Length: 391
Image (cartoon, rainbow, N blue to C red):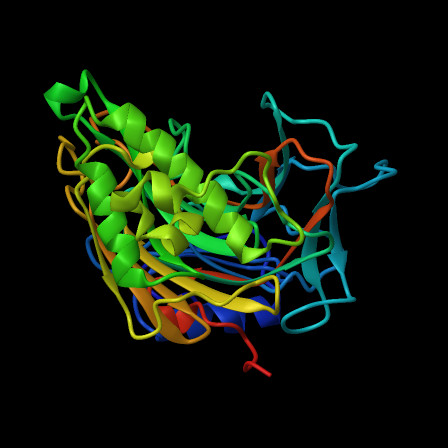
């Protein structure tokens, strides 16, 4: 096999894998390419800085590709009588199979208290690095039981090794898909580093009103914060009640539009704000709605999501000091976020980024099922769209 200058080849190559990698190299840029289903691992060096890892996985094999994924927090594989992760042929976005993750009332919590977890981790070899320009796309669908009344249900998230909360997460509570970012605010008057959250896109409400109510929460004074947060929690409960009154009616949920008139005018948007206390502090996060800012519902059909991001924080002493996220849903631009993500980066810290998909939720009696297909990671949006058109 002839090798172009700047190529280092590790492992064995199939003809299909060689063609896949050559096509990606011809499309421009460099980086690590792993093609699921082919036995290929290549590092392409072009220019002073290599691009991030590239991955294409339609979950077409009979088993999970462990060069790209770790079944770390999920029951999977031979010897499991009741696996939580399967590769199903019954429902998929493209091709023959999709990944299916299921959790129910009987499942124990894994590495968490008061919660349940069934998640698949991105393998270390294919994780992008802090500050790299990265695009990730996948198709996702929520099936199975009803998510009515659900809380803290995360179906996809990006983290770094030191994170407690994901810096970017897809959350699905009460059939409301909302995308959140977390950052660390080190403003001295806050009494030390504090994790702050913002919702950058949601499947209900008005996007401009969602921006406005988060700005209002972020400017609460210490004296006003306890009362306003209690009102905000009531608004969240009330908003979910209005979305599905037959299936979700929390006991004692107040009519918060009367008790909190300043916040109450944003009632629909509070369905997109789980845990209002995380929003009650300033954050250097700016959101600009796109041409299609209201997200589609993955509980109704497959949703194609693409995220372009560069991570950074203004207080970092090395690496990027600014962040940007582009969100696309079903081929249309939903939102752009700029500002801070995660915590500041300092010398010697491991800041690889990794994606997890599946289900992470508060302990519940219901069954949840999440399907994921057409996962792609690259350097441009065109590289991470699904391999087949929308039906």
